[in-house]
Image (cartoon, rainbow, N blue to C red; front, top):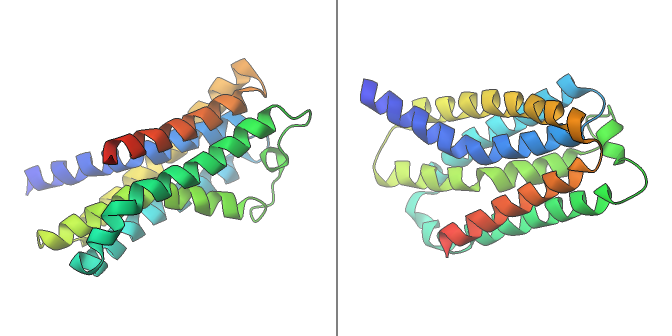
Length: 189
């Protein structure tokens, strides 16, 4: 049982890396309402990291061959779009409006896009759980909690780093997202 829990924790950390990296990138560009924004990102990433394995487990073998063939392209495309937009905005004269906005609905589409893009691998873990007949309740709770904690802390790491580099660091955050997308694509090709 102890070895199984360690395995679940290691899976959770592995799955949380992309979400944590995106949180660091968001922390780099957020100027106002940092605690609320960090919480929104962490809770969204944690919930999606819990929901996707559950969805994967539920779908099981019925759709796995289709998803395995395109999941990396979906993640790459979503991260490329969001990262490209961040790079574009970094070279605008004004600071990105969503960085200064306290309206939680203002960047909802961006948050959902990033949540889906960073949790597609978790879907594959859910498929694996189904194929191996592993109970999913404990692992998905661990995955969600670990993702929440790492993403929340990652956001503030990004905020700390941005205080040294200023507004143009957003371009670096965009490059990070594109890099994650390329990494996902290369791993699956």
